[in-house]
Image 1 (cartoon, rainbow, N blue to C red):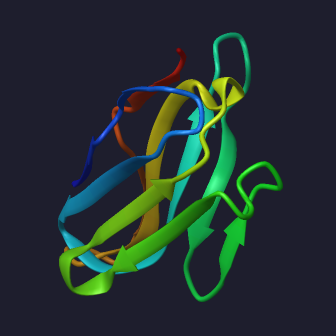
Image 2: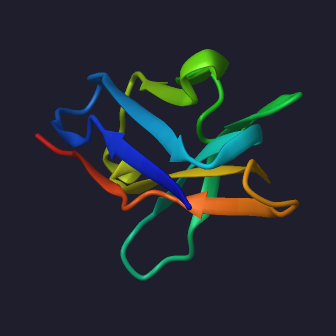
Length: 119
């Protein structure tokens, strides 16, 4: 009932920048949290940055990545600067909130977008 669609991944050289976007659609009454996670090959998915009533960043993202949200459009963005090869991963968008069709919460994931940092 809630769909997340990501865009903006790709190949970038070390030290470069890349922006990711994610839009949520469906039977949404309210989104309380939106965030970005990454999953490297053979590793668990981990939080990169999240925004709700607070904003949080992984230590590896602090000072390099910026998360922003457009509540009117149900969009979340991740601006990534000074990228490093170790940032290479599939990045997933996540959103949690309440459905408009029934008194239930949702926790939705996007399909993932690959970010490759390599020269």
